[in-house]
Image (cartoon, rainbow, N blue to C red; front, side, top):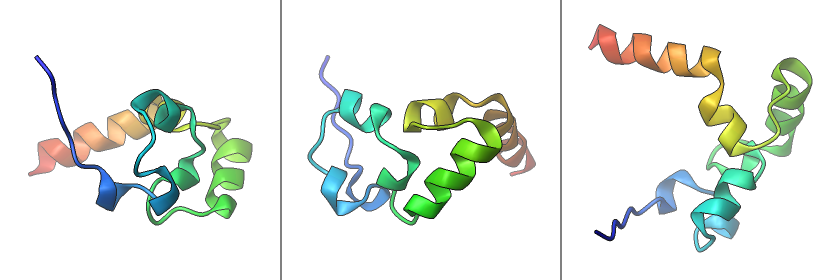
Length: 71
């Protein structure tokens, strides 16, 4: 079964037509609203260099679960 998701509003314009693998390997600044400065902060503070690492970070995942539970 094919799945289609529109991520245009969540990605920087330069990344809108990339493959999922390319997006996951991209720096966090590929997400709309984040900058290269955020890349530096995440890399230096948490060792996060890619969107895949950001999404699988245990602290960020836990925060997301806590927010979801609060609703």
